[in-house]
Image (cartoon, rainbow, N blue to C red; front, side, top):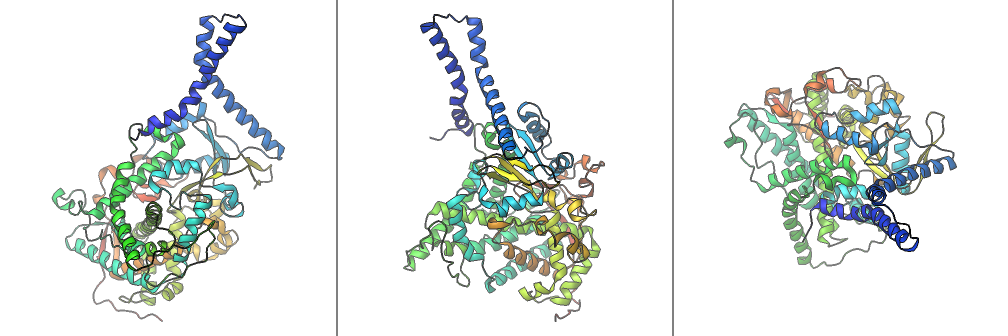
Length: 606
Protein backbone atom coordinates (compact mmCIF):
# COMPACT_ATOMS: atom_id res chain seq x y z
CA UNK A 1 0.00 0.00 0.00
CA UNK A 2 1.36 3.41 -0.95
CA UNK A 3 0.45 6.51 1.02
CA UNK A 4 -0.31 9.94 -0.53
CA UNK A 5 2.77 12.17 -0.88
CA UNK A 6 1.38 14.75 1.55
CA UNK A 7 0.91 12.12 4.27
CA UNK A 8 4.46 10.82 3.75
CA UNK A 9 5.86 14.34 3.90
CA UNK A 10 4.00 15.16 7.12
CA UNK A 11 5.08 11.85 8.62
CA UNK A 12 8.69 12.85 8.03
CA UNK A 13 8.06 16.23 9.65
CA UNK A 14 6.12 14.83 12.60
CA UNK A 15 9.06 13.83 14.83
CA UNK A 16 10.60 17.29 14.53
CA UNK A 17 7.26 19.01 15.18
CA UNK A 18 6.35 16.84 18.17
CA UNK A 19 9.78 16.76 19.82
CA UNK A 20 9.59 20.29 21.36
CA UNK A 21 6.12 19.88 22.97
CA UNK A 22 7.05 16.39 24.17
CA UNK A 23 10.24 17.81 25.61
CA UNK A 24 8.21 20.54 27.31
CA UNK A 25 5.92 17.91 28.87
CA UNK A 26 8.97 15.96 30.04
CA UNK A 27 10.46 19.05 31.70
CA UNK A 28 7.14 19.75 33.44
CA UNK A 29 7.10 16.18 34.75
CA UNK A 30 10.67 16.54 36.06
CA UNK A 31 9.80 19.83 37.76
CA UNK A 32 6.59 18.47 39.24
CA UNK A 33 8.09 15.15 40.38
CA UNK A 34 11.61 15.90 41.56
CA UNK A 35 11.77 19.63 42.17
CA UNK A 36 8.33 20.01 43.66
CA UNK A 37 7.69 22.93 41.32
CA UNK A 38 4.07 22.86 40.25
CA UNK A 39 3.92 24.56 36.85
CA UNK A 40 0.63 26.48 36.44
CA UNK A 41 -1.51 25.44 33.50
CA UNK A 42 -1.56 29.01 32.16
CA UNK A 43 2.24 28.79 31.86
CA UNK A 44 2.51 25.19 30.68
CA UNK A 45 -0.09 25.29 27.88
CA UNK A 46 1.34 28.37 26.08
CA UNK A 47 4.87 26.96 26.46
CA UNK A 48 3.74 23.66 24.98
CA UNK A 49 2.01 25.36 22.04
CA UNK A 50 4.86 27.78 21.37
CA UNK A 51 7.69 25.30 21.90
CA UNK A 52 7.96 24.24 18.26
CA UNK A 53 7.98 27.75 16.68
CA UNK A 54 10.42 28.92 19.38
CA UNK A 55 12.79 25.98 18.78
CA UNK A 56 12.44 26.29 15.00
CA UNK A 57 13.18 30.04 15.10
CA UNK A 58 16.18 29.41 17.32
CA UNK A 59 17.53 26.80 14.85
CA UNK A 60 17.07 29.14 11.88
CA UNK A 61 18.77 32.03 13.66
CA UNK A 62 21.60 29.83 14.88
CA UNK A 63 22.18 28.49 11.36
CA UNK A 64 22.36 32.06 10.04
CA UNK A 65 24.74 33.05 12.86
CA UNK A 66 26.93 29.99 12.25
CA UNK A 67 27.09 30.73 8.53
CA UNK A 68 28.14 34.31 9.18
CA UNK A 69 30.84 33.15 11.58
CA UNK A 70 32.09 30.60 9.07
CA UNK A 71 32.14 33.21 6.30
CA UNK A 72 34.08 35.65 8.50
CA UNK A 73 36.57 32.91 9.37
CA UNK A 74 37.35 32.63 5.66
CA UNK A 75 37.56 36.39 5.19
CA UNK A 76 34.32 36.25 3.23
CA UNK A 77 30.70 37.36 3.49
CA UNK A 78 27.36 35.82 2.69
CA UNK A 79 25.73 37.02 -0.55
CA UNK A 80 23.20 39.85 -0.11
CA UNK A 81 19.71 38.69 0.87
CA UNK A 82 16.51 39.71 -0.88
CA UNK A 83 14.15 41.31 1.69
CA UNK A 84 11.11 39.12 2.34
CA UNK A 85 8.58 38.17 4.98
CA UNK A 86 9.13 35.43 7.55
CA UNK A 87 10.46 32.34 5.83
CA UNK A 88 10.14 33.89 2.37
CA UNK A 89 6.48 32.88 2.22
CA UNK A 90 5.69 36.05 0.27
CA UNK A 91 8.03 34.97 -2.54
CA UNK A 92 6.33 31.58 -2.80
CA UNK A 93 2.88 33.17 -2.85
CA UNK A 94 4.01 35.66 -5.49
CA UNK A 95 5.32 32.83 -7.68
CA UNK A 96 2.00 31.00 -7.34
CA UNK A 97 -0.03 34.14 -8.04
CA UNK A 98 1.95 35.11 -11.14
CA UNK A 99 2.24 31.60 -12.53
CA UNK A 100 1.61 31.67 -16.28
CA UNK A 101 2.17 35.38 -16.75
CA UNK A 102 5.83 35.77 -15.77
CA UNK A 103 8.36 35.78 -18.59
CA UNK A 104 11.09 33.09 -18.16
CA UNK A 105 14.05 34.43 -16.22
CA UNK A 106 12.51 37.89 -15.74
CA UNK A 107 12.27 37.80 -11.90
CA UNK A 108 15.89 36.60 -11.67
CA UNK A 109 17.17 39.38 -13.91
CA UNK A 110 15.20 42.07 -12.08
CA UNK A 111 16.63 40.90 -8.75
CA UNK A 112 20.12 40.64 -10.25
CA UNK A 113 19.93 44.28 -11.38
CA UNK A 114 19.15 45.30 -7.79
CA UNK A 115 21.16 42.77 -5.78
CA UNK A 116 24.05 41.81 -8.07
CA UNK A 117 24.68 38.60 -9.96
CA UNK A 118 24.80 36.48 -6.82
CA UNK A 119 22.19 36.91 -4.12
CA UNK A 120 20.30 34.94 -1.52
CA UNK A 121 16.53 34.50 -1.42
CA UNK A 122 14.71 32.68 1.37
CA UNK A 123 12.16 30.07 0.31
CA UNK A 124 10.30 28.19 3.05
CA UNK A 125 12.92 29.26 5.65
CA UNK A 126 15.75 27.98 3.47
CA UNK A 127 18.30 30.24 1.76
CA UNK A 128 18.90 29.66 -1.94
CA UNK A 129 21.82 31.35 -3.65
CA UNK A 130 20.91 32.53 -7.15
CA UNK A 131 23.76 32.93 -9.64
CA UNK A 132 23.88 34.64 -13.06
CA UNK A 133 27.62 35.41 -13.12
CA UNK A 134 29.75 33.47 -15.69
CA UNK A 135 32.78 33.27 -13.39
CA UNK A 136 30.70 31.58 -10.68
CA UNK A 137 28.91 29.30 -13.14
CA UNK A 138 32.34 28.27 -14.45
CA UNK A 139 33.36 27.38 -10.90
CA UNK A 140 30.16 25.38 -10.35
CA UNK A 141 30.29 23.45 -13.60
CA UNK A 142 34.01 23.05 -14.18
CA UNK A 143 36.82 24.30 -11.96
CA UNK A 144 35.25 23.19 -8.65
CA UNK A 145 33.01 20.50 -10.10
CA UNK A 146 33.48 18.14 -7.12
CA UNK A 147 32.16 20.78 -4.70
CA UNK A 148 28.76 20.77 -6.41
CA UNK A 149 26.18 18.12 -7.25
CA UNK A 150 22.61 17.93 -8.50
CA UNK A 151 21.54 17.36 -4.91
CA UNK A 152 18.81 15.59 -3.01
CA UNK A 153 16.36 18.40 -3.69
CA UNK A 154 16.59 17.80 -7.44
CA UNK A 155 16.03 14.09 -6.92
CA UNK A 156 13.02 14.83 -4.73
CA UNK A 157 11.48 17.10 -7.36
CA UNK A 158 12.38 15.18 -10.52
CA UNK A 159 12.76 11.66 -9.15
CA UNK A 160 9.34 10.47 -10.32
CA UNK A 161 10.13 11.71 -13.82
CA UNK A 162 13.86 11.06 -14.24
CA UNK A 163 14.25 8.13 -11.83
CA UNK A 164 17.80 6.77 -11.69
CA UNK A 165 18.79 8.46 -14.97
CA UNK A 166 21.92 10.50 -15.62
CA UNK A 167 20.35 13.97 -15.19
CA UNK A 168 19.37 13.46 -11.55
CA UNK A 169 22.27 11.20 -10.55
CA UNK A 170 25.35 12.15 -8.53
CA UNK A 171 28.58 10.51 -7.47
CA UNK A 172 29.33 6.95 -8.52
CA UNK A 173 25.89 6.47 -10.09
CA UNK A 174 26.46 9.50 -12.32
CA UNK A 175 29.90 8.20 -13.30
CA UNK A 176 28.34 4.86 -14.21
CA UNK A 177 25.73 6.50 -16.43
CA UNK A 178 28.33 8.75 -18.03
CA UNK A 179 30.62 5.80 -18.73
CA UNK A 180 27.78 3.91 -20.39
CA UNK A 181 26.55 6.68 -22.65
CA UNK A 182 29.80 8.49 -23.57
CA UNK A 183 31.00 6.06 -26.28
CA UNK A 184 27.68 6.27 -28.11
CA UNK A 185 28.07 10.00 -28.77
CA UNK A 186 31.77 10.03 -29.60
CA UNK A 187 31.62 10.13 -33.38
CA UNK A 188 29.39 10.96 -36.31
CA UNK A 189 27.75 8.03 -38.03
CA UNK A 190 26.43 7.76 -41.57
CA UNK A 191 23.23 6.17 -40.27
CA UNK A 192 22.41 9.33 -38.28
CA UNK A 193 22.05 11.38 -41.47
CA UNK A 194 19.99 8.68 -43.17
CA UNK A 195 17.69 8.76 -40.16
CA UNK A 196 17.44 12.58 -40.24
CA UNK A 197 16.59 12.51 -43.94
CA UNK A 198 13.78 9.97 -43.64
CA UNK A 199 12.07 11.74 -40.77
CA UNK A 200 12.63 15.23 -42.26
CA UNK A 201 10.98 14.14 -45.49
CA UNK A 202 8.08 12.64 -43.54
CA UNK A 203 7.62 15.89 -41.57
CA UNK A 204 7.75 18.04 -44.70
CA UNK A 205 5.21 15.78 -46.41
CA UNK A 206 2.86 16.32 -43.46
CA UNK A 207 3.32 20.09 -43.76
CA UNK A 208 2.56 20.06 -47.47
CA UNK A 209 -0.53 17.98 -46.80
CA UNK A 210 -1.78 20.55 -44.27
CA UNK A 211 -0.97 23.45 -46.59
CA UNK A 212 -3.00 21.69 -49.27
CA UNK A 213 -5.96 21.75 -46.87
CA UNK A 214 -5.49 25.54 -46.58
CA UNK A 215 -4.85 25.38 -42.84
CA UNK A 216 -1.88 26.66 -40.85
CA UNK A 217 0.13 24.10 -38.91
CA UNK A 218 1.70 24.03 -35.46
CA UNK A 219 5.43 23.92 -36.13
CA UNK A 220 6.23 23.32 -32.46
CA UNK A 221 4.05 20.22 -32.42
CA UNK A 222 5.45 19.05 -35.75
CA UNK A 223 9.08 19.44 -34.74
CA UNK A 224 8.43 17.72 -31.41
CA UNK A 225 7.03 14.76 -33.36
CA UNK A 226 10.00 14.82 -35.74
CA UNK A 227 12.43 14.87 -32.80
CA UNK A 228 10.48 12.14 -31.00
CA UNK A 229 10.50 9.85 -34.03
CA UNK A 230 14.13 10.43 -34.98
CA UNK A 231 15.46 10.28 -31.41
CA UNK A 232 13.34 7.21 -30.70
CA UNK A 233 14.83 5.36 -33.67
CA UNK A 234 18.31 6.67 -32.83
CA UNK A 235 18.10 5.71 -29.16
CA UNK A 236 16.18 2.46 -29.08
CA UNK A 237 15.61 1.41 -32.66
CA UNK A 238 11.91 2.14 -32.43
CA UNK A 239 10.17 4.70 -34.62
CA UNK A 240 7.42 6.12 -32.41
CA UNK A 241 5.56 7.18 -35.60
CA UNK A 242 4.13 10.27 -33.95
CA UNK A 243 4.20 12.01 -37.35
CA UNK A 244 2.04 9.22 -38.78
CA UNK A 245 -0.60 9.97 -36.15
CA UNK A 246 -1.37 13.21 -38.01
CA UNK A 247 -0.89 16.87 -37.11
CA UNK A 248 -3.35 18.80 -34.95
CA UNK A 249 -5.66 21.36 -36.52
CA UNK A 250 -6.24 24.94 -35.32
CA UNK A 251 -8.71 25.29 -32.46
CA UNK A 252 -11.46 26.56 -34.73
CA UNK A 253 -11.53 23.35 -36.84
CA UNK A 254 -14.31 20.90 -35.80
CA UNK A 255 -13.12 18.45 -33.14
CA UNK A 256 -13.87 15.40 -35.28
CA UNK A 257 -10.96 16.41 -37.48
CA UNK A 258 -8.62 17.83 -34.84
CA UNK A 259 -8.97 14.76 -32.62
CA UNK A 260 -7.61 12.42 -35.28
CA UNK A 261 -4.59 10.54 -33.97
CA UNK A 262 -5.23 11.40 -30.34
CA UNK A 263 -5.64 7.71 -29.46
CA UNK A 264 -2.36 6.73 -31.13
CA UNK A 265 -0.06 5.25 -28.46
CA UNK A 266 2.82 7.48 -29.45
CA UNK A 267 0.58 10.54 -29.11
CA UNK A 268 -0.45 9.43 -25.64
CA UNK A 269 3.22 8.88 -24.77
CA UNK A 270 4.22 12.38 -25.93
CA UNK A 271 1.28 14.00 -24.12
CA UNK A 272 2.05 12.09 -20.91
CA UNK A 273 5.72 13.10 -21.06
CA UNK A 274 4.77 16.75 -21.54
CA UNK A 275 2.37 16.58 -18.62
CA UNK A 276 5.00 15.01 -16.36
CA UNK A 277 7.47 17.78 -17.24
CA UNK A 278 4.93 20.51 -16.50
CA UNK A 279 4.18 19.03 -13.09
CA UNK A 280 7.89 18.60 -12.29
CA UNK A 281 8.64 22.20 -13.23
CA UNK A 282 5.73 23.38 -11.07
CA UNK A 283 7.35 21.76 -8.04
CA UNK A 284 10.52 23.82 -8.37
CA UNK A 285 9.52 26.87 -6.29
CA UNK A 286 8.40 24.64 -3.40
CA UNK A 287 11.54 22.52 -3.21
CA UNK A 288 11.20 19.55 -0.89
CA UNK A 289 7.81 20.84 0.31
CA UNK A 290 6.10 20.07 -3.04
CA UNK A 291 4.07 17.14 -1.52
CA UNK A 292 2.00 19.70 0.39
CA UNK A 293 0.68 20.94 -2.96
CA UNK A 294 0.02 17.44 -4.33
CA UNK A 295 -1.22 16.20 -0.99
CA UNK A 296 -3.42 13.26 -1.97
CA UNK A 297 -1.86 12.24 -5.27
CA UNK A 298 1.52 12.37 -6.97
CA UNK A 299 0.42 14.09 -10.17
CA UNK A 300 3.32 12.63 -12.16
CA UNK A 301 2.46 9.04 -11.31
CA UNK A 302 -0.38 8.78 -13.85
CA UNK A 303 1.50 10.24 -16.83
CA UNK A 304 4.58 8.19 -16.02
CA UNK A 305 2.46 5.04 -16.09
CA UNK A 306 1.70 5.82 -19.74
CA UNK A 307 5.38 6.52 -20.42
CA UNK A 308 6.46 3.19 -18.91
CA UNK A 309 3.71 1.36 -20.78
CA UNK A 310 5.25 2.71 -23.99
CA UNK A 311 8.90 1.98 -23.09
CA UNK A 312 8.64 -1.42 -21.38
CA UNK A 313 7.87 -3.47 -24.53
CA UNK A 314 10.76 -1.78 -26.36
CA UNK A 315 13.20 -2.73 -23.60
CA UNK A 316 11.79 -6.25 -23.37
CA UNK A 317 12.25 -6.69 -27.12
CA UNK A 318 15.85 -5.42 -26.97
CA UNK A 319 16.66 -7.82 -24.10
CA UNK A 320 15.09 -10.71 -25.98
CA UNK A 321 17.14 -9.93 -29.11
CA UNK A 322 20.33 -9.84 -27.07
CA UNK A 323 19.64 -13.21 -25.49
CA UNK A 324 18.66 -14.69 -28.84
CA UNK A 325 22.04 -13.60 -30.19
CA UNK A 326 23.77 -15.76 -27.58
CA UNK A 327 25.49 -12.83 -25.86
CA UNK A 328 24.65 -12.64 -22.17
CA UNK A 329 27.66 -10.86 -20.68
CA UNK A 330 27.86 -7.26 -19.46
CA UNK A 331 30.99 -5.14 -19.17
CA UNK A 332 32.61 -4.48 -15.80
CA UNK A 333 32.20 -0.85 -14.80
CA UNK A 334 33.93 0.16 -11.59
CA UNK A 335 33.57 3.71 -10.36
CA UNK A 336 32.67 4.84 -13.84
CA UNK A 337 36.15 3.93 -15.09
CA UNK A 338 35.69 1.78 -18.18
CA UNK A 339 37.38 1.66 -21.53
CA UNK A 340 35.21 3.15 -24.25
CA UNK A 341 33.40 0.45 -26.13
CA UNK A 342 33.45 0.61 -29.92
CA UNK A 343 29.91 1.41 -31.05
CA UNK A 344 28.91 -0.32 -34.25
CA UNK A 345 27.43 1.49 -37.24
CA UNK A 346 23.64 1.49 -36.97
CA UNK A 347 23.66 0.31 -33.35
CA UNK A 348 21.04 1.89 -31.08
CA UNK A 349 21.65 3.29 -27.61
CA UNK A 350 19.66 0.46 -26.03
CA UNK A 351 21.76 -2.14 -27.81
CA UNK A 352 24.88 -0.33 -26.65
CA UNK A 353 23.71 0.02 -23.04
CA UNK A 354 22.82 -3.67 -22.81
CA UNK A 355 26.56 -4.33 -22.86
CA UNK A 356 26.78 -2.59 -19.47
CA UNK A 357 23.61 -3.56 -17.62
CA UNK A 358 20.39 -5.53 -17.99
CA UNK A 359 18.63 -3.76 -15.12
CA UNK A 360 15.33 -2.75 -16.73
CA UNK A 361 14.64 0.14 -14.36
CA UNK A 362 18.07 1.66 -14.93
CA UNK A 363 17.83 1.13 -18.69
CA UNK A 364 14.36 2.64 -18.86
CA UNK A 365 15.35 5.65 -16.78
CA UNK A 366 18.50 6.24 -18.82
CA UNK A 367 16.68 5.97 -22.14
CA UNK A 368 13.96 8.31 -20.88
CA UNK A 369 16.52 10.88 -19.68
CA UNK A 370 18.36 10.89 -23.01
CA UNK A 371 15.09 10.79 -24.94
CA UNK A 372 13.73 13.87 -23.16
CA UNK A 373 16.99 15.70 -23.78
CA UNK A 374 17.15 14.59 -27.41
CA UNK A 375 13.57 15.53 -28.18
CA UNK A 376 13.26 18.75 -26.21
CA UNK A 377 16.62 20.28 -27.15
CA UNK A 378 16.00 19.91 -30.88
CA UNK A 379 12.32 20.83 -30.64
CA UNK A 380 13.05 23.95 -28.55
CA UNK A 381 15.90 25.11 -30.77
CA UNK A 382 14.05 24.69 -34.06
CA UNK A 383 10.79 26.10 -32.70
CA UNK A 384 12.48 29.35 -31.75
CA UNK A 385 14.55 29.47 -34.95
CA UNK A 386 11.37 29.38 -37.03
CA UNK A 387 9.63 31.79 -34.64
CA UNK A 388 12.48 34.28 -35.14
CA UNK A 389 12.65 33.74 -38.89
CA UNK A 390 8.96 34.66 -39.25
CA UNK A 391 9.81 38.09 -37.86
CA UNK A 392 13.15 38.57 -39.65
CA UNK A 393 12.64 38.12 -43.41
CA UNK A 394 16.14 39.46 -44.11
CA UNK A 395 17.71 36.67 -42.03
CA UNK A 396 15.40 34.13 -43.68
CA UNK A 397 16.50 35.28 -47.14
CA UNK A 398 20.21 35.22 -46.26
CA UNK A 399 20.00 31.80 -44.62
CA UNK A 400 18.07 30.30 -47.51
CA UNK A 401 20.56 31.79 -49.98
CA UNK A 402 23.43 30.12 -48.09
CA UNK A 403 21.60 26.80 -48.17
CA UNK A 404 20.91 27.06 -51.89
CA UNK A 405 24.47 28.04 -52.74
CA UNK A 406 26.01 25.31 -50.59
CA UNK A 407 23.59 22.38 -50.86
CA UNK A 408 21.17 23.30 -53.61
CA UNK A 409 17.41 22.84 -53.69
CA UNK A 410 17.22 19.05 -53.45
CA UNK A 411 20.44 17.39 -52.27
CA UNK A 412 20.70 16.16 -48.69
CA UNK A 413 23.31 18.05 -46.63
CA UNK A 414 26.46 16.44 -45.25
CA UNK A 415 28.67 17.21 -42.21
CA UNK A 416 31.10 18.88 -44.63
CA UNK A 417 28.32 21.20 -45.80
CA UNK A 418 27.61 22.24 -42.22
CA UNK A 419 31.25 23.17 -41.69
CA UNK A 420 30.99 25.58 -44.63
CA UNK A 421 27.65 27.10 -43.60
CA UNK A 422 28.79 29.71 -41.09
CA UNK A 423 25.56 31.65 -41.20
CA UNK A 424 23.48 28.56 -40.44
CA UNK A 425 25.55 27.93 -37.29
CA UNK A 426 25.24 31.62 -36.36
CA UNK A 427 21.42 31.42 -36.63
CA UNK A 428 21.39 28.36 -34.39
CA UNK A 429 23.77 29.87 -31.84
CA UNK A 430 21.95 33.19 -31.65
CA UNK A 431 18.70 31.31 -31.03
CA UNK A 432 20.37 29.22 -28.34
CA UNK A 433 21.62 32.45 -26.76
CA UNK A 434 18.23 34.15 -26.48
CA UNK A 435 16.20 30.97 -25.95
CA UNK A 436 18.45 28.35 -24.29
CA UNK A 437 16.51 25.07 -23.99
CA UNK A 438 17.13 24.87 -20.21
CA UNK A 439 16.85 28.48 -18.96
CA UNK A 440 17.33 27.71 -15.25
CA UNK A 441 19.26 24.89 -13.61
CA UNK A 442 20.41 24.09 -10.09
CA UNK A 443 23.31 22.64 -8.15
CA UNK A 444 23.84 21.92 -4.46
CA UNK A 445 27.13 22.46 -2.60
CA UNK A 446 28.75 19.32 -1.18
CA UNK A 447 31.05 21.37 1.08
CA UNK A 448 31.56 25.07 1.89
CA UNK A 449 32.55 27.07 -1.19
CA UNK A 450 34.34 30.41 -1.50
CA UNK A 451 33.49 32.44 -4.60
CA UNK A 452 35.87 35.31 -5.44
CA UNK A 453 34.43 38.79 -5.72
CA UNK A 454 34.18 40.10 -9.28
CA UNK A 455 34.03 43.73 -8.10
CA UNK A 456 37.06 43.89 -5.78
CA UNK A 457 35.17 43.34 -2.51
CA UNK A 458 35.23 40.41 -0.14
CA UNK A 459 34.62 36.93 -1.55
CA UNK A 460 31.29 35.17 -1.02
CA UNK A 461 30.77 32.16 1.23
CA UNK A 462 28.28 29.40 0.38
CA UNK A 463 27.59 26.92 3.20
CA UNK A 464 27.64 23.19 2.58
CA UNK A 465 24.39 21.67 1.27
CA UNK A 466 23.18 25.01 -0.08
CA UNK A 467 20.93 25.06 -3.14
CA UNK A 468 22.39 27.18 -5.92
CA UNK A 469 20.04 27.88 -8.86
CA UNK A 470 21.70 29.47 -11.90
CA UNK A 471 20.28 30.91 -15.10
CA UNK A 472 22.07 30.84 -18.44
CA UNK A 473 19.09 32.66 -19.98
CA UNK A 474 19.75 35.70 -17.77
CA UNK A 475 23.50 35.45 -18.41
CA UNK A 476 22.90 35.22 -22.18
CA UNK A 477 20.89 38.46 -22.10
CA UNK A 478 23.19 40.61 -19.96
CA UNK A 479 24.12 43.80 -21.79
CA UNK A 480 27.45 44.06 -19.93
CA UNK A 481 28.42 40.63 -21.32
CA UNK A 482 26.91 40.81 -24.81
CA UNK A 483 26.63 44.51 -25.59
CA UNK A 484 23.79 47.05 -25.53
CA UNK A 485 21.83 45.08 -28.14
CA UNK A 486 21.82 41.86 -26.07
CA UNK A 487 18.01 41.61 -26.20
CA UNK A 488 18.05 41.68 -30.02
CA UNK A 489 18.05 38.49 -32.09
CA UNK A 490 20.90 39.11 -34.49
CA UNK A 491 22.86 36.08 -35.87
CA UNK A 492 25.56 38.44 -37.18
CA UNK A 493 26.91 38.78 -33.62
CA UNK A 494 28.40 35.28 -33.99
CA UNK A 495 30.25 36.38 -37.15
CA UNK A 496 31.16 40.07 -36.90
CA UNK A 497 33.47 41.96 -34.53
CA UNK A 498 31.15 41.35 -31.57
CA UNK A 499 32.27 37.70 -31.51
CA UNK A 500 35.88 38.73 -30.79
CA UNK A 501 34.82 41.52 -28.46
CA UNK A 502 32.51 39.55 -26.18
CA UNK A 503 32.51 35.77 -26.63
CA UNK A 504 36.08 34.88 -27.58
CA UNK A 505 37.66 36.42 -24.42
CA UNK A 506 35.04 34.82 -22.15
CA UNK A 507 33.51 31.63 -23.65
CA UNK A 508 31.64 30.87 -20.41
CA UNK A 509 29.10 33.60 -21.19
CA UNK A 510 27.54 31.16 -23.72
CA UNK A 511 26.47 27.83 -22.20
CA UNK A 512 23.39 26.44 -23.98
CA UNK A 513 24.66 22.87 -23.51
CA UNK A 514 26.14 23.18 -20.01
CA UNK A 515 29.90 22.84 -19.46
CA UNK A 516 32.52 20.86 -17.58
CA UNK A 517 32.28 17.12 -16.85
CA UNK A 518 28.47 17.21 -17.20
CA UNK A 519 28.48 18.94 -20.59
CA UNK A 520 25.78 17.61 -22.90
CA UNK A 521 27.09 14.50 -24.67
CA UNK A 522 24.58 14.93 -27.48
CA UNK A 523 25.58 18.51 -28.34
CA UNK A 524 26.98 17.66 -31.77
CA UNK A 525 24.06 15.34 -32.49
CA UNK A 526 21.64 18.17 -31.67
CA UNK A 527 23.47 20.63 -33.93
CA UNK A 528 23.49 18.11 -36.80
CA UNK A 529 19.84 17.14 -36.37
CA UNK A 530 18.67 20.75 -36.17
CA UNK A 531 20.88 21.82 -39.09
CA UNK A 532 19.73 18.94 -41.26
CA UNK A 533 16.04 19.61 -40.69
CA UNK A 534 16.46 23.35 -41.21
CA UNK A 535 18.20 22.78 -44.55
CA UNK A 536 15.49 20.40 -45.74
CA UNK A 537 12.76 22.75 -44.50
CA UNK A 538 14.15 25.82 -46.27
CA UNK A 539 14.79 23.83 -49.42
CA UNK A 540 11.06 23.07 -49.48
CA UNK A 541 9.58 26.42 -48.38
CA UNK A 542 10.44 29.89 -49.61
CA UNK A 543 8.29 31.94 -47.23
CA UNK A 544 7.00 31.82 -43.64
CA UNK A 545 4.54 33.86 -41.62
CA UNK A 546 2.79 33.58 -38.27
CA UNK A 547 -0.88 32.59 -38.21
CA UNK A 548 -2.02 34.57 -35.13
CA UNK A 549 -5.69 33.67 -35.60
CA UNK A 550 -4.83 29.99 -35.11
CA UNK A 551 -3.26 30.65 -31.71
CA UNK A 552 -5.65 29.36 -28.99
CA UNK A 553 -7.18 32.41 -27.27
CA UNK A 554 -6.21 31.17 -23.79
CA UNK A 555 -2.57 30.85 -24.89
CA UNK A 556 -2.04 34.25 -26.43
CA UNK A 557 0.38 36.84 -25.11
CA UNK A 558 -0.81 38.23 -21.74
CA UNK A 559 -2.02 41.83 -22.06
CA UNK A 560 0.46 42.91 -19.38
CA UNK A 561 3.38 42.01 -21.66
CA UNK A 562 2.50 44.93 -23.95
CA UNK A 563 3.09 47.42 -21.12
CA UNK A 564 6.54 49.07 -20.84
CA UNK A 565 8.84 47.01 -18.66
CA UNK A 566 12.30 47.53 -17.20
CA UNK A 567 14.02 44.80 -19.23
CA UNK A 568 12.26 45.22 -22.56
CA UNK A 569 12.03 41.45 -23.03
CA UNK A 570 8.29 40.79 -23.01
CA UNK A 571 7.30 43.59 -25.35
CA UNK A 572 9.33 42.01 -28.16
CA UNK A 573 7.40 38.76 -28.08
CA UNK A 574 4.54 38.11 -30.48
CA UNK A 575 3.73 34.80 -28.78
CA UNK A 576 3.67 33.68 -25.14
CA UNK A 577 7.11 32.26 -24.30
CA UNK A 578 7.13 29.93 -21.28
CA UNK A 579 9.20 27.15 -19.74
CA UNK A 580 8.86 23.90 -17.82
CA UNK A 581 12.07 21.86 -17.93
CA UNK A 582 12.72 23.53 -21.30
CA UNK A 583 11.44 26.63 -23.07
CA UNK A 584 8.37 26.48 -25.30
CA UNK A 585 5.64 28.62 -26.87
CA UNK A 586 2.31 28.39 -25.12
CA UNK A 587 -0.38 27.07 -27.46
CA UNK A 588 2.15 26.17 -30.16
CA UNK A 589 3.80 27.98 -33.07
CA UNK A 590 1.10 28.23 -35.72
CA UNK A 591 2.48 29.31 -39.07
CA UNK A 592 1.74 29.45 -42.78
CA UNK A 593 4.42 28.37 -45.24
CA UNK A 594 4.85 29.12 -48.92
CA UNK A 595 6.03 26.11 -50.87
CA UNK A 596 9.11 26.68 -53.01
CA UNK A 597 8.43 26.80 -56.74
CA UNK A 598 9.08 23.58 -58.58
CA UNK A 599 10.90 25.54 -61.26
CA UNK A 600 13.32 27.14 -58.82
CA UNK A 601 16.83 26.85 -60.16
CA UNK A 602 19.10 24.57 -58.17
CA UNK A 603 22.48 26.01 -57.35
CA UNK A 604 25.12 23.35 -57.01
CA UNK A 605 27.38 23.54 -54.00
CA UNK A 606 31.14 23.76 -54.37
